[in-house]
Amino acid sequence: MSKVRVPAVEGWFTMDEREPHLIGERGTRTGSYFWPKAVAVSANPLAPDEEREEVLLSRHGRLWSWTTNHYPPPEPYVAPDPFVPYTVCAVELERERMVVLGQLATGADPAALAVGMEMELVLGPLFEDDAHEYVVWQWAPRAATAARGEAGR
Amino acid sequence: MSADRSIAILGVGMHPWGKWGRNFVEYGLVAAREALADAGLAWTDIQFVSGGETVRNGYPGYVAGATFAQALGWNGAQVASSYAACASGVTALSTARAQILAGLCDVALVVGADTTPKGFLAPNKGERGDDPDWLRFRLLGATNPTYFGLYARRRMELHGATREDFALVKVKNARHGMANPHARYRKEVTVDDVLAAPVVSDPLGLLDICATSDGAAALVVSSVEYARARGRADAPRIRAISTVTPSYPQTTIELPNFATDSAAGAGEPPAHGFKESIARRAYEEAGVGPEDLDCAEVYDLSTAMELDWYEQIGLCAPGDAERLLRDGATALGGRVPVNPSGGLACFGEAVPAQAIAQVCELAWQVRGVAHGRQVEGARAGLSVNQGLFGHGSAVVVTA
Image (cartoon, rainbow over all chains, first blue to last red; front, side):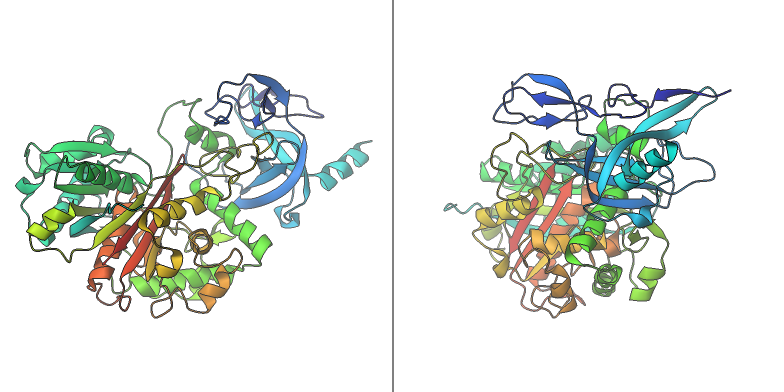
């Protein structure tokens, strides 16, 4: 029986399996972007009271940097047993002019990464329990996702 | 600034760094008593006690100032406790300085101590869905070294740094720390040792990343008049203390955040990044510049971050740090030795004590008593660090 896919955190990203987006906010006056909206994010001090509207952030960006972790992190991370190294990417969004972290897409090869590479937002597994697969946003090299799309057609 | 806002460092003290497995209060007591003895003062002379907090030791850790005051014996001194993560010690120092400069007290004890758990620093327990520090572990597995790894990889890609460059920072600091009786690690390390160590957060290995340690550091500080009256007109001076926060938009990804600020719609970005602004503020207040420094204590949470600091405190232009290192400018005997104490590479981090420990080293250096690691003719030094959630800290100490 397949497990139910649920977001590992509510309200941070859309569960659109084909074209997921991070759910952010935009200041209606300055046009500054904010994400994730659920936790403390700084305000533009020149417009501290500006209204914010919900907005989907760009799905594509350029790789700012990355690192692969070879030791299991402490709780509350749910590490698989045996532990599998995982890569964290920092991706620069052009329109939003901000850098957003996310794990590298499950199965993508960190050895193929380079700063400036085009990346695309995807959904992937973070951990699971008996009934659910908890899903999180991830970054995939765009060439790889394009190739996968071709293969699937 | 025209007005002299200096205060005097009358005494310094430390409990050696290590993994001693005892209560942090014990370490703080050792450091405090050593600083008092160094100052030639009794605890009962102290009018204000300022503690750097630790958040892993329960209630007494959260009220560090009073905890140390009680352990030393209640003396009625006024008290404050400061939390600013890695910058806690300097925030505590800045509180003491404000009391002194406002004329509210003449002499103060500043103390920080920590007992750290084994392994990665982790967030507080419990389901903490509104705490970015908890969420970054939960949703990303973004440990502290993850951020260090991102910076290191970026340096390699942008400036052509190599893992060997990073290793050379460790080799240098290990050599500096060998003669430091307070350092935890006191043995020579080779480039091969660093490169052969297990990888933690690629490209950084176990020897590129600072450990967590137990330790304590303390300072007795006073007004310049008080120092003079006690025949200590020659005591080292604290010329400036910077405790700045970032300016919007903060466009570098920082612990424990998931994203930077957005620079869209924010007008002109600030002229300097956050880390650059930390030292800059201290230089402005002290009326000195990087060219005036004889040494610096920088927060080498990783080897690669020490190279970043060279640029962020103005020792060289962006991209030139590797050359500065390879030229030997930042080693003992060079133009501006960095981390003559051995730095975090030899100490490991004892969070609320570490920024105080940096200032202790500068005091020893300008007094000319840093045996085995003395920077020849040191007259001026800068310490700099950064704590979680946007706490900058920098101190300028002169002879």
